[in-house]
Length: 141
Image (cartoon, rainbow, N blue to C red; front, side):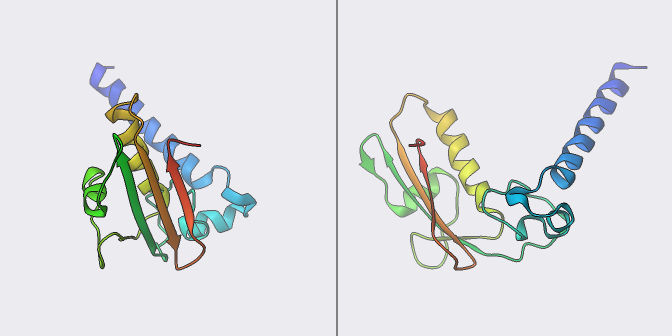
């Protein structure tokens, strides 16, 4: 077999393994496997990293990002620009129709890759479908 064919097969197998784990792996919160598979992140959007699914996103995430960089508090608009988010509605809030974990993963990846010795502080607060308010902080405390 040629090197390209072997590489292509390896990539295909990795993708298949990823899809199998995401769709058929352990369900969050002890919910039944069938419910998790059919509902996707709609069943439990908090902490869900399943960005692509056949189930529709039937939830709305409202979030705010506040950041302190090198001792300076960023304006809401500057905080959104830092992480390449788009504020919506009134200044300082964003609307997102993917799992909130995606926002958290984006902020965490930026902070880990930006300057690990920095003492930057970030707070992401969000609600899902107007439910309880959740808060995530960087660095983890």
